[in-house]
Image (cartoon, rainbow, N blue to C red):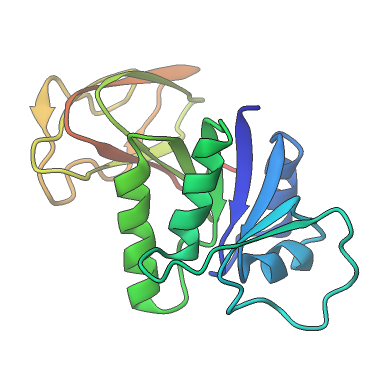
Length: 207
């Protein structure tokens, strides 16, 4: 087992995107209220994790769905779900519903992604795709004139890039717009993270 799709309680991206990703993964999971988002796009999770305080009412019969109740008040349902997925040996988790809704919920969701990025490979899906990557070389599919933005997650973030129109060479990426709207020039491009972590945002990528 390797890849999973996790739906949170926040607003979801378009139905076509979620269905495309759902076909690629080994497991569909929902964090409590994310169940209603899954059903809204005609996806049935194999497992629902959380304290069930946001559990939707008047559900259709879901005989193949397992409910894992966890009432730990010191962790969000998002954190509980990631912990279960890691324990179950999933490596790569696509996450829907991180953005939108209450501002405090969204900020906490992003902080959870940041905290777990060293434990799981996480890809946030919205109308585009976002990944948080750490030290090492990372290769991505490109295509001529495809936009990618790089946003530092830590003050020490230092990068080199190959295959982008505006290259970086062991440059410390500080807070600000330096990494905004770069452009791929070939079929693939590479980002090497020398230190820290960086958000890689593909605003126009569907899968």
